[in-house]
Amino acid sequence: AIIFLLIQLALCSEQYSGVTLVLRSIDRPLVIYWFIYLILGIFICKNLNYLSYLSEKINLPIKILLISIYSFACFLENSWLFKITEGDIPPFDYVMISCILSVPVIFICCVNLTEEQFNSRLKNTISLLSKYSLGIFCFNGIISQVFLSFGTRWFSEIIFNLPELLIMKLVGWIGLLAISLGLSMLFNRLGLKNVVC
Image 1 (cartoon, rainbow, N blue to C red):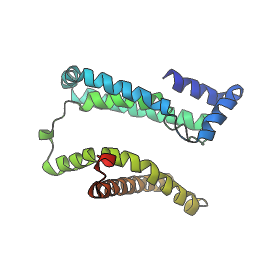
Image 2: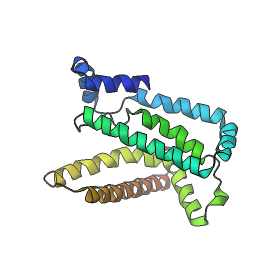
Image 3: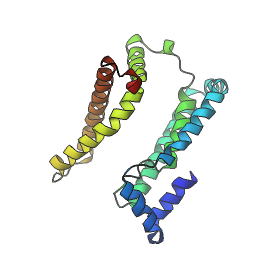
Image 4: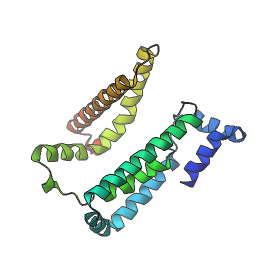
């Protein structure tokens, strides 16, 4: 969180523009950004029973409130990041404290869910996505860059309104997920299971 705050402060100040220029020249989120998720994973693993117990004690309206507060915080921080980068957010997409907060908030709200609570079709979908989550994650980065490259070329002169943007984002997200999942399944059939599962 301190590193994220320092980077955001550097983005606000001309005095530290050299730091942000170096980070922009790398043009990728730094590996150090992900360390917190390893720590959160270890914490969750060591405290899983207690977190499940705590999740059961929190009623649904409180969980909805927690997710709503997190969503609003994410919106505010993203707006702030948009402002201080003058709309040129990448590669600072993940330099948000609200990104870190997403893990404990979503986890504490969902950890007590069991597969018996879902119908078989949804259960099978979740199982499929879980099985190929590594492949989806890996292919997502590559395919999204391809989408971005073509989208920038094709739509650079067009101005979209908010509903059109939202529809394009949703369709793009579904397409990205479908392609990433399809490639993961293909790699699995080609004998590259360790790469995607």
